[in-house]
Image (cartoon, rainbow, N blue to C red; front, top):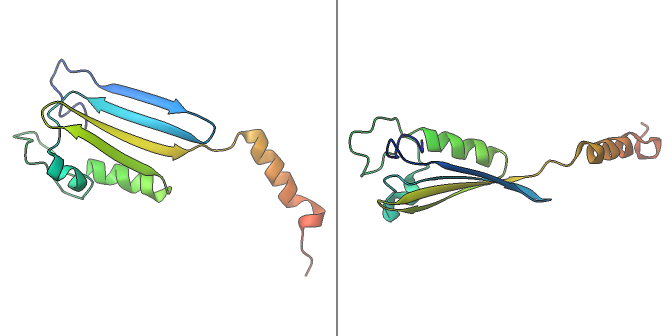
Length: 117
């Protein structure tokens, strides 16, 4: 998506950051930007911006990304300046380390936690 709406010599910046609670994925381009009045609509299925000219597409990409992100109870946001740049940020919760998962599993399987019927 970012490649499609950026100049051929444009730079796409992909940044992944994490801390103990979340992973943040940011994609930023220096393309055509999205008009402020249309930014809330870019995640709607089949929506195409008014400033895309003859760039082909279906208007499904961002709707699918948002659907995937929200299906995992996470968040996606947009920041854009018309004619300048667009940045999408996805925030995902971190999955506990495998050793943390092992401890939880052992506790759940412990005989004192089992119910007898």
